[in-house]
Length: 144
Image (cartoon, rainbow, N blue to C red; front, top):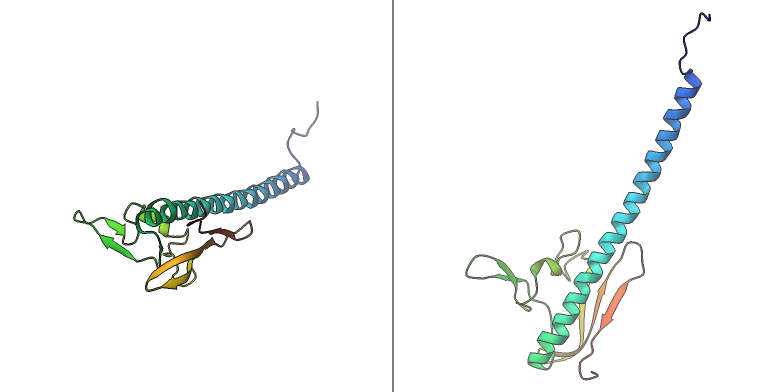
């Protein structure tokens, strides 16, 4: 019989700990990348929703685009609603960092153009992205 008990050596334990450490770092790096792509997808959903509200609701009803997007109002029940787009969820006008469209450092931008007397006939709607190029949509207007 052997005098020694079977056990892991210090080198084996150190190696296992190092492997787990590397795997943990890789996991969190991939998780951060996946989270950034998810935030980019949420930005695209928001910009597309604003775009379709501009085109299919606002422009269809008024024949022009707004000169700026008004901050939110409060309805009779105390809920926040966008003043310019009452049919749009207020959450869609706020970027993933909680900043309202067109405010300082917001990822979302609405830039109207060809404006006369508060009526605009063109615009550029965009969002900064983390893992992709800037996401940009322009008016459809009369070119339907």
